[in-house]
Image (cartoon, chains in turn purple, cyan):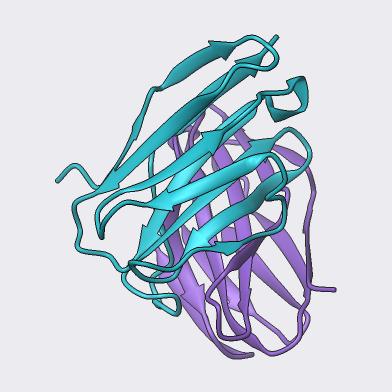
Length: 110
Length: 114
């Protein structure tokens, strides 16, 4: 069964304190791995798509990496505005359906 | 750009009542999806429509029906609401089922069934 597990569930950082979020997956025939950001009361917002092991993508203070079993979202020198829930999802097979993890809620304190 | 618009934003239903959640996108996307989000459960797919005229069940379809009214609109109907359907519902769309930039989500409908 396709499965996505994110850790930790919650993460508190001081402004400027770098860290990483983990997304472990078990899927048959990975087509793509997606990262989203979700602010309270809003829908998820697309950040990155990764397709193959070794691939990396960056956006401002965020960098996503992919291995054959997991993905990391590295946050460098975070700011309070980076506080949000970060969702990981995998796409398998030909239907395009995304399977989401439970998310990691990040709080960055000034 | 409006993107994906969901109505209503909030709704309270009594057990057994019915309602339809509306979703419309203005990006000329072919594929549309309904998810529900519950604490600790993540986003779970209810139904999806890969293209106009087609619909398929997702992970948690029981108690729901959908209609792909046209390319723009995809509605979700609860025929007889139950407290277990209390959740936040998100509609999403993508250019195609395998679009490489993922989905565009609406802002959600917060539904409470009492």
